[in-house]
Image (cartoon, rainbow, N blue to C red; front, side, top):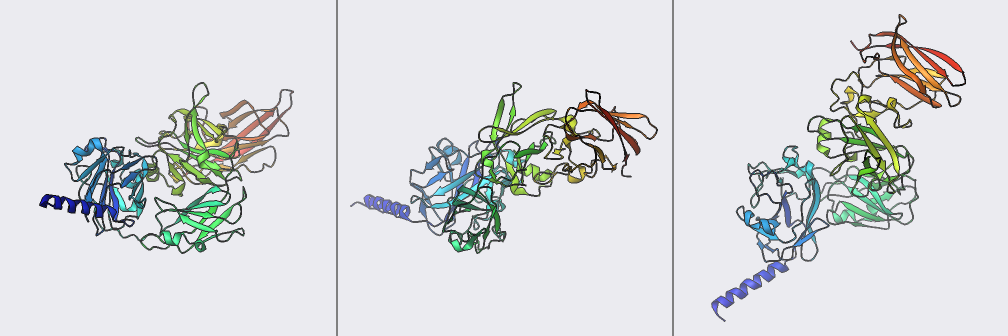
Length: 571
């Protein structure tokens, strides 16, 4: 054997040995991603994923795979990744450009990275998920850089399963650091305990517990760590789900019943840093198909501040548990045909009675501009239907495209005293009253930050049982948009249908200042809303006002009611 032949044999043996090495989870990690390369700051206009070897072992990456679930690419050549070194994974066409930054591998079928978020996972030739991440735009922690041209980098590569808290936008002037140590490299001590976020149901004997971060597979697979009320107790068996290992699938001993609320309690589960679970109780239920008026439109921001984003809030007013994956939001063409139909959730997500959910195209922006009391119920979608600033249509549908609720909003439903409507959400006052009744909508209060996404509206007022035929509430109101008694409601209750009404408001001197209703047809019960303005939409002075309500029908029956109300304002 010649010297050259011997050297080649040794080299081939080395490659074979390195390729046969069996990795453990987190030996090689994804530590930088570049999902949105445009506009270019200084890097090539092409996506990439960077891998780092954080182990003490060299690995041959031949036959390793990069995937985002629907698309998988395989490394088809020998590439030795040494300990504490990096490699850039990109498309075959971008490999030449990225070679200027460091070791790079161009692979055919490189999976496209979604700008708004994706699950990416790295698999060894044996099928082991070595590392996986589920990123989204919030991982940038920077609204400007999330618009494109900047990579997202891991801060502490010794804590690869810490989640979004351990990632942020690159601070390198080029927009990223492919092939070298991350610009944000530092120490991140993961002291945050995992939380049981929610559950969803596969069928009536299988539920899935969802955690807010990666959990330890060993502790999360112990059936004794789970307990379900209503006599279920421990599940029969539990397994954790790859690639993120943030879900546990529970098999039950008996069947869940529809429209019954259960609770799952979890103990003894840790994350990969050893933090033990903290928040450990979540609702469980078997979803059913939502029907008309089960889910209603409760709040909408259709005229956000400059460079802001719309949002729509939904409320489950029924006693049913439904699945957000089976609900859709849409608008309509001028012909009335549905258009821009968008699912409310890309995956299973239970919507329990009495809960609020909000959809938007930018979760981070909403959180920065409004108080979001329940961040888990603020959902970021890739796109929403168009909701114009002046007037528009919102429709919520079920899986059979039955309209559950529909709103044709107008910007003049906002409080007339507001000079600039930008950034002020329109809130539903009573979810039991008709959606299309203008008096059932009001501007979100200034004291609530002009919007209440994910929780009860600032202008919420459920219709109470009326005493008498015409009542006024409150007796003293202050139309200053602080969320407290901003409107005067003239409530009516009639013995039968077919009545009309005229409502005139007089000042203390007996002069008419507002004609609130003119031959308006009435339901059996309902209300009118007065905002403290006159017919020219001017503010009226504080004082006592008389409300004269005339109720009549076409057969000549008529009755007149007199109510007194005080208009007040803060000093």
